[in-house]
Length: 395
Image (cartoon, rainbow, N blue to C red; front, top):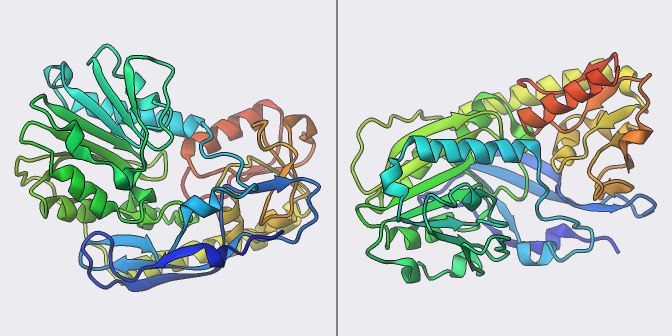
């Protein structure tokens, strides 16, 4: 039975989740594909998993967000959803870089003996980097798990967590990696958290950057999972309303144009953020769509009924902008969970690398991270593929 995802809309929002000001429509996305859902390769159902979506822009604090919020508790119960987290080279590198940022902007003495709390810690991958640095490691996540007994598990939905139970006279270091962009009401969670952040405590966050999305025209990374696209401006203004300030920050374009920030109670005056306006978003999106339209026309004959490589979660949003992907005869992938599947909203079957025809050109279809695209390119080169296309403006 096909799922009508329009019926699973939990909320339609027009006010900014950060500052509550009324936002304006920046991008209209009719019949936009959901990502992360697969079906069996022999499933004969018509394509499904589309929703009419809009991306809204808040001029006041420079925040981008989705108009329609889906009910995650319902859509992730669907049988078409086969994985909530697939490890990748890009994700691993992003975690490594986040750890380096934390260690490079914090004295080791500040971490020693502190209570380190990972908000949205999933399988505790991030916390494991701090084993031996401090003995107080806590993973807060509805699906929290760990194979190391030194990490304490706190399973609860983030919106329901009572952070006061973590309050203590010990220094607290909160960390959160690629979590707040998924939240329906990130401001509510962050404000709850701010109430127990004392003058010696630290908050580290990393999330997809609105600035890099706009500057580099990576609108293919818009997806239903990422409800919010924070900027340095929007996160700074939200934190400043609670008496906290960004002390250090860095951008990383390797993985979803990530922004990393260190936040404390001390007032900081050196953080300068760039402001965008609605025209910037509209104009860069227009350039993005024009680029992909031209690319699609120029390589259509080469890849008609051809082969793609990489069935990563974001392929449907790339195909939305590069429709020839839907006419490929096959998408090759090495993840066993995806082999002999199809995306619920794309035609090509997904098969293993044994089905790769090395005599034919290959279109790289997993480009959401530079690491993923580069790794695929080098693999294909080593296999002797002569014609390879990476359909991205910047890799």
